Amino acid sequence: MGGGRGNPFVLDLREFGGAFGDLGTLLPLMLGAIAVAGLAPAPVLLGFAAFYIGSALYYRLPIPVQPMKAVGAVILTAGATPAELAASGAMLGAALLLLGATGWIARIARLVPVAALTGLQVGLGATLGWMSLEMMAGAPVVAAVALAALAGMFAAPRWPWAPVALAASALAAHFLGAPGLEIAPAGGLALAPPPWPGVAELERAVSVLALPQLSLTVTNAVLVTALVAGDYFGDRAAHATPARLSITSGLANLLLTPLGAQPMCHGAGGLAAHYRFGARTGTAPLLMGAMLAALAVLPAGPAAIAAIPAAGLGALLLAASIELALSKRLFESAPALWPAIAVSAGVTVWTGPFWGLLAGCAAELARRAGARALGRAGAGGG
Image (cartoon, rainbow, N blue to C red; front, side, top):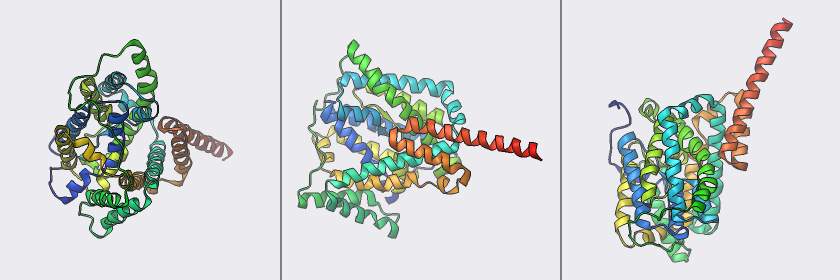
């Protein structure tokens, strides 16, 4: 834990703006879990606050905290009980802690070709971009207002354009009658843990929630997040390794989800979002954690967040998706790697990150085998 790891905490307008960068991912899934699954708002908000603050203090970089997306999708489409979510979060936490503590996650990282991870990053960015367009389609005028505000980044990149865009979109939505995020807060401010899951709930927590989420977390929240952190911060992100990202995600879920928090992880898209809107130190996640903690103790906190229109959040998500997909590594990749990158990206968009990663690995291994065969044939012919 040397002093050179991370960046010194700095409080300025860029860090303040960067703190809001990942709300396009955080708010819809967080508020959806409260509204649909009936999670108590206070433990959910406090869970994200604790994980954000802990990540800020440990990494001293804008390492994000996000709801687990596969779990969030199940909540919004098929529903899940608080007991199922607590059980799945604890199981995922234990698995991630084991992978990180034993070093197995580092072995996985060494086996994965960079071309496959680059394609995975492009595919995740494209997926987030499509999601952002769907969010903006419901209120295109509101989205246009938010995008116009975000365009200010090109003229004055140090100003906090993310909160400005959210405020402008909320104001436009108010005058145009566009809806915000729909939420019916449940559970009040109670901090009581969810009930103990029954056998059927445990089975569903494993098969429907934990197993589909684990592959997504290992790829996006651990492997690609470590890769993107290295791209942005170089040696300052030397401690943001796959093993440590796996351990911090594991500890957060193992300790907090049994108390009513939502299953959480890091995420490459969230890191790109915080960075795109100005975050360069741990100050941005520290500010976000403090704001979420404050909202947890305010009776109208979740409702106040829900007043932000989905179209405004979609605009933030679009900017983050472009930042994630169009990485420096993509443009510097050798032409020989393009097929594997394209395969990984395409399959990620079509079926998901786990299969995209496997397809990209297979394509790159096939390319290497072909290159070796051609080399042997050329040597034999000489």
